[in-house]
Length: 112
Length: 112
Image (cartoon, rainbow over all chains, first blue to last red; front, side, top):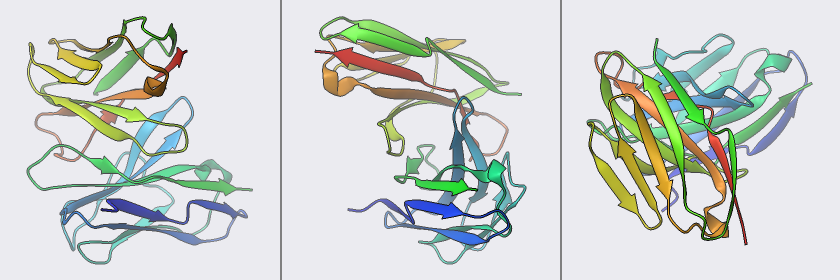
Protein backbone atom coordinates (compact mmCIF):
# COMPACT_ATOMS: atom_id res chain seq x y z
CA UNK A 1 0.00 0.00 0.00
CA UNK A 2 1.89 3.07 -1.28
CA UNK A 3 -0.35 5.75 0.29
CA UNK A 4 0.68 9.18 -1.03
CA UNK A 5 3.46 9.18 -3.63
CA UNK A 6 5.35 12.31 -4.70
CA UNK A 7 7.82 12.85 -7.54
CA UNK A 8 10.50 14.02 -7.85
CA UNK A 9 12.07 13.64 -4.42
CA UNK A 10 14.86 16.12 -5.14
CA UNK A 11 15.09 18.94 -7.70
CA UNK A 12 17.36 21.90 -8.29
CA UNK A 13 16.01 24.73 -10.42
CA UNK A 14 17.42 27.98 -11.69
CA UNK A 15 15.52 31.18 -10.99
CA UNK A 16 12.81 31.63 -13.61
CA UNK A 17 12.55 27.99 -14.59
CA UNK A 18 9.27 26.14 -14.33
CA UNK A 19 8.49 22.70 -13.00
CA UNK A 20 5.66 20.50 -11.82
CA UNK A 21 5.56 18.38 -8.69
CA UNK A 22 3.46 15.28 -9.12
CA UNK A 23 1.37 13.59 -6.44
CA UNK A 24 -0.79 10.49 -6.49
CA UNK A 25 -2.71 8.68 -3.74
CA UNK A 26 -4.11 5.17 -3.78
CA UNK A 27 -6.39 5.43 -0.74
CA UNK A 28 -9.48 6.56 -2.68
CA UNK A 29 -9.45 9.87 -0.78
CA UNK A 30 -11.51 12.78 -2.09
CA UNK A 31 -9.42 15.62 -0.64
CA UNK A 32 -5.82 16.42 -1.50
CA UNK A 33 -3.39 19.12 -0.36
CA UNK A 34 -0.05 20.72 -1.00
CA UNK A 35 1.96 22.03 1.96
CA UNK A 36 5.39 23.57 2.23
CA UNK A 37 7.69 23.22 5.23
CA UNK A 38 10.39 25.75 5.99
CA UNK A 39 12.77 25.87 8.96
CA UNK A 40 11.20 27.74 11.87
CA UNK A 41 7.89 28.18 10.03
CA UNK A 42 6.01 24.93 10.42
CA UNK A 43 3.88 23.41 7.68
CA UNK A 44 1.82 25.87 5.63
CA UNK A 45 -1.00 25.06 3.23
CA UNK A 46 -0.44 26.18 -0.37
CA UNK A 47 -3.53 24.82 -2.15
CA UNK A 48 -6.10 22.15 -1.54
CA UNK A 49 -8.69 20.25 -3.52
CA UNK A 50 -11.80 19.21 -1.63
CA UNK A 51 -12.89 16.91 -4.43
CA UNK A 52 -12.16 16.10 -8.05
CA UNK A 53 -12.70 19.19 -10.16
CA UNK A 54 -12.29 21.75 -7.39
CA UNK A 55 -9.26 23.61 -6.06
CA UNK A 56 -8.89 26.40 -3.51
CA UNK A 57 -6.14 28.64 -2.24
CA UNK A 58 -4.55 27.99 1.11
CA UNK A 59 -2.36 30.19 3.25
CA UNK A 60 0.54 30.78 0.81
CA UNK A 61 -0.68 30.32 -2.81
CA UNK A 62 1.29 33.07 -4.56
CA UNK A 63 3.65 31.76 -7.24
CA UNK A 64 1.95 28.38 -7.52
CA UNK A 65 -0.76 26.74 -9.58
CA UNK A 66 -2.41 23.36 -9.11
CA UNK A 67 -4.31 20.83 -11.17
CA UNK A 68 -6.55 18.09 -9.87
CA UNK A 69 -6.10 15.75 -12.79
CA UNK A 70 -8.45 13.07 -11.47
CA UNK A 71 -9.39 11.62 -8.10
CA UNK A 72 -5.92 10.13 -7.59
CA UNK A 73 -3.63 12.89 -8.82
CA UNK A 74 -2.95 16.46 -7.72
CA UNK A 75 -0.04 18.40 -9.21
CA UNK A 76 1.70 21.60 -8.10
CA UNK A 77 3.28 23.87 -10.69
CA UNK A 78 5.86 26.60 -10.25
CA UNK A 79 5.64 28.77 -13.37
CA UNK A 80 8.69 30.94 -12.68
CA UNK A 81 10.68 29.64 -9.74
CA UNK A 82 12.13 32.07 -7.20
CA UNK A 83 14.72 31.45 -4.45
CA UNK A 84 11.94 32.06 -1.88
CA UNK A 85 10.31 28.88 -3.13
CA UNK A 86 13.22 26.78 -1.90
CA UNK A 87 11.47 24.46 0.50
CA UNK A 88 10.27 20.96 1.23
CA UNK A 89 6.91 20.28 -0.37
CA UNK A 90 4.46 17.72 0.98
CA UNK A 91 1.41 16.36 -0.74
CA UNK A 92 -1.33 14.97 1.48
CA UNK A 93 -4.80 13.49 1.27
CA UNK A 94 -7.83 12.77 3.43
CA UNK A 95 -11.20 11.08 3.23
CA UNK A 96 -14.30 13.26 3.10
CA UNK A 97 -15.87 13.48 6.53
CA UNK A 98 -12.66 12.56 8.31
CA UNK A 99 -10.25 15.11 9.72
CA UNK A 100 -7.07 13.07 9.54
CA UNK A 101 -4.66 14.09 6.80
CA UNK A 102 -2.04 11.63 5.51
CA UNK A 103 1.22 12.94 4.08
CA UNK A 104 3.63 11.84 1.37
CA UNK A 105 7.37 11.57 1.80
CA UNK A 106 8.18 15.07 0.56
CA UNK A 107 9.91 16.76 -2.37
CA UNK A 108 13.05 18.81 -1.70
CA UNK A 109 13.23 21.79 -4.04
CA UNK A 110 16.16 24.19 -4.28
CA UNK A 111 15.96 27.31 -6.45
CA UNK A 112 19.31 28.94 -7.19
CA UNK B 1 -6.18 33.91 13.90
CA UNK B 2 -5.50 30.35 15.00
CA UNK B 3 -2.17 29.84 16.73
CA UNK B 4 -0.22 26.81 17.91
CA UNK B 5 2.86 27.02 20.12
CA UNK B 6 4.92 23.95 20.95
CA UNK B 7 7.43 23.68 23.75
CA UNK B 8 10.18 22.95 24.27
CA UNK B 9 11.71 23.42 20.81
CA UNK B 10 14.11 20.57 21.54
CA UNK B 11 14.26 17.93 24.26
CA UNK B 12 17.01 15.48 24.97
CA UNK B 13 16.22 12.45 27.17
CA UNK B 14 18.02 9.38 28.34
CA UNK B 15 16.45 6.06 27.44
CA UNK B 16 13.78 5.30 30.03
CA UNK B 17 13.46 8.92 31.19
CA UNK B 18 9.78 9.87 30.88
CA UNK B 19 8.72 13.41 29.94
CA UNK B 20 6.03 15.49 28.24
CA UNK B 21 5.78 17.75 25.23
CA UNK B 22 3.42 20.71 25.29
CA UNK B 23 1.14 22.17 22.62
CA UNK B 24 -0.67 25.40 23.50
CA UNK B 25 -3.34 26.61 21.11
CA UNK B 26 -5.77 29.44 20.50
CA UNK B 27 -8.69 28.88 18.17
CA UNK B 28 -12.18 30.31 17.97
CA UNK B 29 -13.56 26.81 18.43
CA UNK B 30 -11.69 23.52 18.29
CA UNK B 31 -12.79 20.92 15.77
CA UNK B 32 -9.78 18.70 16.40
CA UNK B 33 -6.20 18.64 17.64
CA UNK B 34 -3.71 16.42 15.85
CA UNK B 35 -0.33 14.96 16.77
CA UNK B 36 2.11 13.85 14.09
CA UNK B 37 5.57 12.32 14.22
CA UNK B 38 8.14 13.33 11.60
CA UNK B 39 11.42 11.48 11.05
CA UNK B 40 14.31 13.22 9.26
CA UNK B 41 13.76 13.27 5.51
CA UNK B 42 10.22 11.89 5.81
CA UNK B 43 6.68 13.17 5.79
CA UNK B 44 4.62 13.63 8.95
CA UNK B 45 3.10 10.39 10.23
CA UNK B 46 -0.30 10.61 11.92
CA UNK B 47 -0.41 9.65 15.61
CA UNK B 48 -3.58 10.94 17.30
CA UNK B 49 -6.65 13.12 16.95
CA UNK B 50 -8.28 14.62 20.06
CA UNK B 51 -11.66 16.34 19.89
CA UNK B 52 -12.71 17.49 23.36
CA UNK B 53 -11.21 18.51 26.69
CA UNK B 54 -10.53 15.54 28.91
CA UNK B 55 -9.99 13.17 26.04
CA UNK B 56 -6.93 10.89 26.13
CA UNK B 57 -5.45 8.52 23.56
CA UNK B 58 -2.57 6.07 23.83
CA UNK B 59 -0.26 4.27 21.45
CA UNK B 60 2.62 2.21 22.79
CA UNK B 61 4.76 4.58 24.89
CA UNK B 62 2.83 7.70 23.83
CA UNK B 63 -0.22 9.21 25.50
CA UNK B 64 -1.91 12.39 24.30
CA UNK B 65 -4.19 14.48 26.50
CA UNK B 66 -6.28 17.58 25.83
CA UNK B 67 -7.51 20.54 27.87
CA UNK B 68 -9.30 23.67 26.68
CA UNK B 69 -6.02 25.49 26.13
CA UNK B 70 -3.33 22.87 25.57
CA UNK B 71 -2.42 19.32 24.76
CA UNK B 72 0.35 17.18 26.18
CA UNK B 73 2.15 14.30 24.56
CA UNK B 74 3.47 12.12 27.38
CA UNK B 75 6.32 9.76 26.56
CA UNK B 76 6.80 6.94 29.04
CA UNK B 77 10.15 5.12 29.23
CA UNK B 78 11.24 6.34 25.79
CA UNK B 79 13.55 4.37 23.53
CA UNK B 80 16.04 5.71 20.95
CA UNK B 81 13.58 4.85 18.17
CA UNK B 82 11.19 7.45 19.61
CA UNK B 83 13.63 10.15 18.48
CA UNK B 84 11.81 12.38 15.97
CA UNK B 85 10.15 15.76 15.60
CA UNK B 86 6.64 15.79 17.04
CA UNK B 87 4.16 18.17 15.40
CA UNK B 88 0.91 19.48 16.81
CA UNK B 89 -1.86 20.95 14.65
CA UNK B 90 -5.36 22.31 15.22
CA UNK B 91 -8.44 22.49 13.06
CA UNK B 92 -11.00 25.18 13.87
CA UNK B 93 -14.77 24.95 13.86
CA UNK B 94 -16.45 27.20 11.33
CA UNK B 95 -13.47 27.57 9.06
CA UNK B 96 -12.48 25.43 6.16
CA UNK B 97 -12.76 21.75 6.93
CA UNK B 98 -9.38 21.38 5.37
CA UNK B 99 -7.22 23.92 7.10
CA UNK B 100 -4.78 22.72 9.73
CA UNK B 101 -2.63 25.19 11.64
CA UNK B 102 0.65 23.57 12.62
CA UNK B 103 3.10 24.36 15.37
CA UNK B 104 6.82 24.42 14.69
CA UNK B 105 7.42 21.10 16.38
CA UNK B 106 9.48 19.65 19.20
CA UNK B 107 12.66 17.80 18.27
CA UNK B 108 12.99 14.84 20.63
CA UNK B 109 16.30 13.00 20.98
CA UNK B 110 16.47 9.86 23.12
CA UNK B 111 19.97 8.72 23.96
CA UNK B 112 20.73 5.04 24.68
